[in-house]
Image (tube, rainbow over the protein chains, first blue to last red):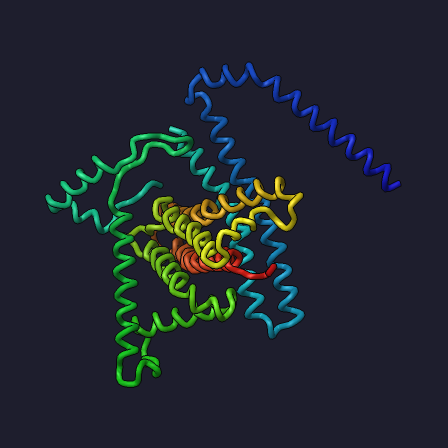
Length: 116
Length: 258
């Protein structure tokens, strides 16, 4: 049963990847038209991109930081004497997770800077 | 919200400063655009604030040294929180941090570097919270400088410790895996200074913008919680930068597999 599942899932993966490569060929003509229209008419897309960038990044970051904080609080609840070191490492972990959100925020700033 | 004026703009009253500014702008300003970086304005404010940070650090260090030369050789801490006490506290805290992460033998060796980084980044971050100053860490200029220095130093310390066999670390644990491990290790090494610089810059810039946005909306009491958050973020980002530096250097210098 396990081997069948593995075989089927690997075949499906290969088919999906081949399917996506077909999509890439279809965009050739579109990209040229968009570029020649100039930047001003793309402001809508750029604004949408900026909003989506920070939105999705904040979503993932929020979930990740929530899990980290929950694990740290669990550890402190089991062992209140270790609250100092556990809290310190929690802050470090939170800052590292947050840095990924900050990368997306920088992209959002750069995109917003392109508008107007 | 773009950059705002600083106290250093009052220096523009002096003709000498204006001509110095124009001369520097003629020689050093960036006229090219690359990828996503647009046109850049020009201001000497960041350089002047960075100089101010260095002056404050040097002043604190001198206060610390004067303390060690006092009658009791600096054993008794001062009664009140003055500059010497603050720097003594920071020195001890950073030494504890370095010893905890890198082990005793390495701690004495790398403590000056980590301590200098910590003081520069912390005071640079905090000075951005004072109205009228900007943090020199909120652009890529200062941050890439520090991050590149850390990157070069990790490799220099690694080569010093292991000789040229240091570069065998890039090949991974076993030889057949080497063609796979080499690109991964190279990319992860190149990503380190970029991530260090961008993390610090993003945090400082975003925090400043948030405080500015709320200041524009309600100038009276509402920006206060965000400035408290900014205080916390300044401390945490200095801590994260120094911890990552310590981790990178200790990974380059460790003798684990020998």
